[in-house]
Image (cartoon, rainbow, N blue to C red; front, side, top):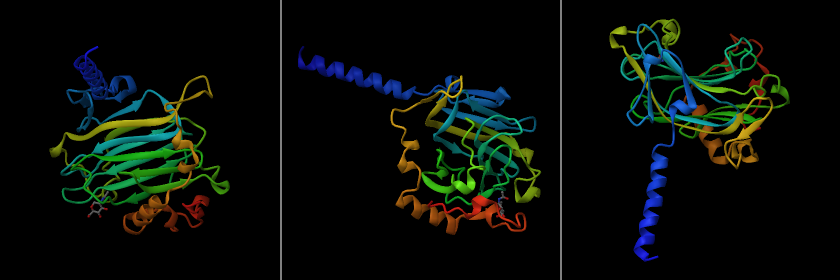
Length: 290
Ligand SMILES: *[C@@H]1O[C@H](CO)[C@@H](O)[C@H](O)[C@H]1NC(C)=O
């Protein structure tokens, strides 16, 4: 073969790889729209997804697969301008029954110019009440930012742009309240929550600004995929880094970041709310460095 023929072939190969990368993710193959399909749309190339809320309804989508442990990540750009009363949620959930396990990111909208609040929560067997609220160090309506869950049998970590903002450990003291048995779907939705979301429900959704749109892209999962019949579990990667020792604890750099978040961005923590919990739950005394 002549040199230029070889070069040409290599170019073709590279082109093929690029094209694969460009069309790597199919929404239809990975997700179902759970309600109001007419409030869901995608960009022309199918890689960016829009969820719309208007006076009639919100909208939600969920993965077709369930997973037990892994790394789950998505880029979101939230409703901008006057978004008071509007909640965008991005969460892991086992099912919709009373005994569900759930890990939540909930983005609480606000009046124009007022900051969004990020609320997180953890449910085990239908019991939640583990809210934390954080300020963000950027405006989440201006650009896409990455929100991720790391979930293994040792810890659950919520990340914002790879900064750990919340840690929930599985220890002897917390093994009954640590969600680790039920596989979960990844779910996302937008809805009207003006009865509680913004300044405790004082700020109502201004429908003059509808439709409200949250935007998604780059869903990324490296996880153990749950296949019936129980308990088969197929790893989606060859190296389950999310299940290995390094993912059981924070790295030194992550500890520094986590401490910074704790000092500067936490606006509510159920673990310090002794009015609500005169006797604080067991997990509140577990060290995040454990
Ligand atoms: C909305 O803005 C107000 C005023 O800055 C602030 O007190 C509140 O925490 C913000 N977020 C929510 C969800 O109410």
